[in-house]
Length: 272
Image (cartoon, rainbow, N blue to C red; front, side, top):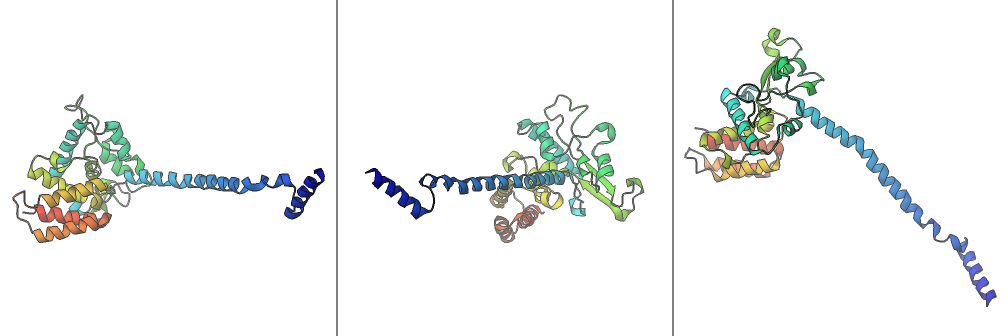
């Protein structure tokens, strides 16, 4: 019997070309190699992800040159500042969280605020030093909106000259009004009059055209629905055919397409 068992074991060794005990040892090697490869892949993605985050933060600090149609009026500035105060009351975001979202620091008022930081750093490789104005001082101390951002406007010279010595052709107008308004997550129900709705819709339509900010999908959908549902409810003359065509384009367009359509809807709906 022992001879038969020995013969059986020897036969297996001859057929496989290796000792019986070694048959299962090498099975784990391919798995280990795959695990090492996967870990290496994840590690290799880290610099890319960090780079993307850094680029987004840097972009949020930049201020886009405003064309004539994007330069905010005093009425628009006052409207956004008032809406920031109302939004602060909701507690949706703290003043410190706003600072993180904007990707900029609150200005040191002793250094002239937003205007001076634009003159010093806009158009340079130190955009991240551009700050924002905020509610402080008399009338704001102790109020719920204290330290929340308020709209800044400024001019700088594209050739690096001081603003006071800049030629007209090199003057660049900028404002953070659209970055700030984009923070506010009000729906149409939060505005109490047709004039407020008109102002909000026009500003919403300008956000991506006039700044580096992007509308969230939620805001895009909400404003599209609002403009569709209120075509006949504001008592103002409209061209329904053109508006519905714009709404259709808005629903199917991408970022830039959607923005153009939203602007068209707002213009058609509220022009008078």
